[in-house]
Length: 146
Figure 1: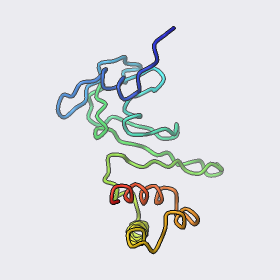
Figure 2: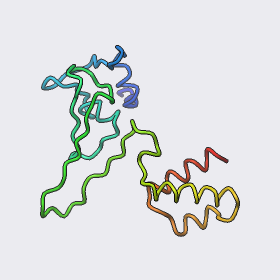
Figure 3: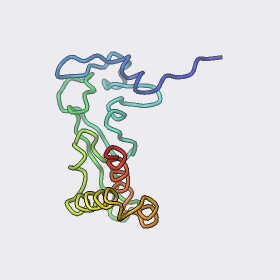
């Protein structure tokens, strides 16, 4: 019986080494790009890109670099009559507040204050939840703050 697979993060860490300012890929290359079986380009995993309509391109010029900050992420727009909604991707390299609009930030802060004051319970929040990514941030901050 084969041993269980290691988590992807461990596999990427074992097959790469830091070489400031790059993260050099020591594993297999396919078409002159880093390649990990079952994952594809490991930089896609480091950037949390799961949608095939989202492309990643190396900008540093070193073909075996997988440093996330050295990649440009291209979110392709659908064709004119395509019914699929545009792909959603939140940049893990950006600070958490940069991912929200000013209105969403105000909603997060207001809801956190209400949770802290006790004027809003978690059950009431989940009964009429805000947008999923806003709710996720509220719950993440509430667990940190409490």
